Structure formats: C-alpha cells, structure tokens
Length: 215
Image (cartoon, rainbow, N blue to C red; front, side):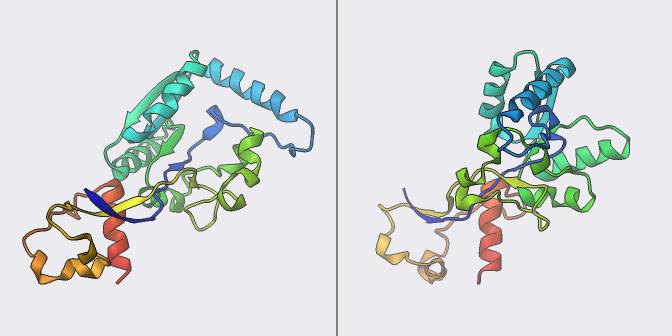
C-alpha cells in the first residue's frame, strides 16, 4: 500500500500533578547544578510515597516500563483508556468526590481541554527540573509547545506524521490521486472504506477533523 500523508501533528499531552516525575526547582540553570539537589529530593519523596498513577492509551506503555526499571521502588499503576473522554470523565468524577489519585494524564489534547476549563490541571513548566527538559533550544522551534491557549497545561512532547489516506497501488494508478478532491471522483463510488466518524479515536479522529475544517 502506498500512502498519502498529511503531516498533521498528533500530540499527546502530559499534565496533572507531575510532582512524582518532576519538581519545581525555583533555580535558574545558571545556578550551577542546583537542580541535582532538587531532583534527588524529588525522587526520594516519590520513593517514599511509592506510587505513580497515570492514565493513557496503549502507545505510552514503553515510557513507563523504562520508568519502572529505573525506579523499582515506585509502583506504577497504569489506567488504560480506550478513549480520552472516558479518562477525563473518570478523573473529573473523582475530583468531585474529593479524590486526587491521578498523577499524569497522557491523551489527545482535544479530550482534556474540558479539564483546563475546569481548572483541574497544574501548569507543567514550573515542575520541570532536568536541564535537558528546561533547555528550550533542544526542543523543536526552540520552545515548549502547548495545546491550550494559555500555553501552560497541555504539553505537546511528541509528534508523528498523520496518515489520512491509503490506496492499493495494484488497483489504483498513483497519478490519479493527487488531492483530497480526487477522492470525490464518481469512479471511486463503492470502492472506498473508512472508519465510522462517530466511533473513530486517536489518529482517525484527527483525520476527520482535518477534513471537516479544511474544505
């Protein structure tokens, strides 16, 4: 299969009390390695608490497998979600009940914007410690990217090309598909399959939104 790729960035978000992973240093990077003391203080506090709870989809398992290897004293509890809205509903329900079990939330930004509106998230940058994280020159375009309008809560830390359309080159001449509009050719009637827009999650949802907002 050959693919037409639209470089829509699919960003995951990290928020909700990141204190078990980072902590606010209050020191500039120029204050010679002061971050190490704060990092040690934070990791010791995390080991004492002994638990990290994060909500995410399948794609993040490798992140926290490595975290568990490095910090075996901290039990990682992964709350797998097959839809960002379900995770948000659960966390907001817990919040209304006075429970704050979640530490990190890594899901699509569009799902978690309601938590930003509800002021249910803590800012991300104030709890960063590691120099390679704070040094914006090491990030794309030399800055931290956020999905929320305030630029504080929904950190976009990863990206990948979004595949919107795929076609079988044994049945379709590649020269016939040069634009999304070419898919409207009557000759393709009955020969196109797609996911249900109502049920589509993750990348498929991004594709549908892109097509809807870009006539």
